[in-house]
Image 1 (cartoon, one colour):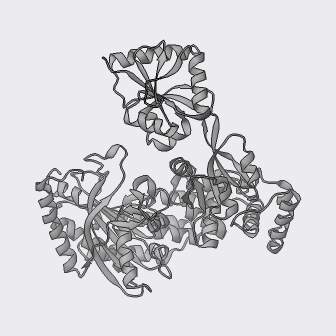
Image 2 (cartoon, rainbow over the protein chains, first blue to last red; image 1 turned 30 degrees about the vertical axis):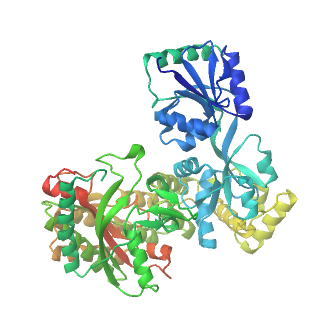
Length: 233
Length: 392
């Protein structure tokens, strides 16, 4: 049998449901098959494609390694975990769900801080006054580093935060944060504001293809078939 | 290097022995710093951009570590362990591997693991003499190892500091320009802002608050800012105090009341940074530029001249060297003299050796104050290639 096109789909929660909905609207019904605990499936009506159900962050790894040909995951995860993302992944389609922004947020009380370029001056003053760097709590270490550098902000240190990031400034374990937000209400409730130019990434669920996967006539044909369905959305 | 053949391994070892013999002869004591280093120290010294080029990892105990991306910082740590007061002159040399992250896993031209041999000279009070000594020893080492026609490029960040000190410019603006010096685009933007609309940062800030802040009454600023926060229901959270916020708002308000930086001063700074010429011609141009603008940086210029004459006396072919006022801007920890040795074989994009003065680094690592320090590193893989034509 020829090699199938591997399609990686989120394995749980709203992301899985919404992916299934979008695929169904495009005339492609995702169906779980087999006995291996529901982590494999097919797309009804598409020959030569096989679905794997894995977590959104694992999908990024599968695409990176070329073990999946295409997959649905958040742009935030792709940008954070793939160096040279644009060269290794191709965006097939933004799927218009799972919207969230990766933002820089500082205490609302920082009346002197409006834009990213203010942070360099604040960071330098902070270091002089406190004898240590201003800390930025985030789980997006790479996105943070890239954007801060692009904005000439160098006087800071990243502290990795894997949960409740928005509470770190009030708790005194960081001075500001880079985090994902949908409405901004959680940030506000924690005494934070998003900088005017502090949206680093507008993320949504996206269908990516992997340049590292093995692209044979068969997998290309299955891809073209899926692309045709997606184009009908 | 990604793959070390036994041939190039032997050749590198033999070359290292030659280089180390030159350094030992000049009374540089050999040290062997650890390959695994605490990441904190590098992050403090270099900043977060370190992570873009360094293997940073967490060990089983949660300690954040890195593979050394250079050997200067590890050597400096050894010096400070031995001399916590940093009050004793010391000469160290080293030879070993350094590690830099390369996207895609590295290539022969951009290996993720390569070697450096180098020297560091600490707490030598006569700075011009120390600068010259380090460059002369480095030249001697690469020439003894077989480099035929070293091409020398030098710079002097001390001249720029002296220039900023000598011109009539508010201290807070001087500090801002000095801090942005390392990012040429941001520096140019800041210089343009200061010489056109210095108060532009005030835009978008609460106008009623700014109007209440009087730069002549700084003591009142904190309570004015606190009142503003209270009346707007904003809670002051976090470690940055209201007083710190108030003093930066005051500085912004002061900028808004200040006349722009005279164009003549902005031009002078730009013109200085544009100087790139053979060393002697560059020296004359600097002198001329400063005289025309009535700027006296006598001491820094004397140090520059004295260093050149010490280098000439020591046998360096200074007439052939290039001076570049911008040189050194990409390495934030340099503070004074900087130099680079290139070869005809590998061209200017692949220097054989580089070094300079880094007086601030010791304080960052834990010395009680800035300590004179100057050093150089030889990229020995490149040296081998240039000196023998060997492929590695």
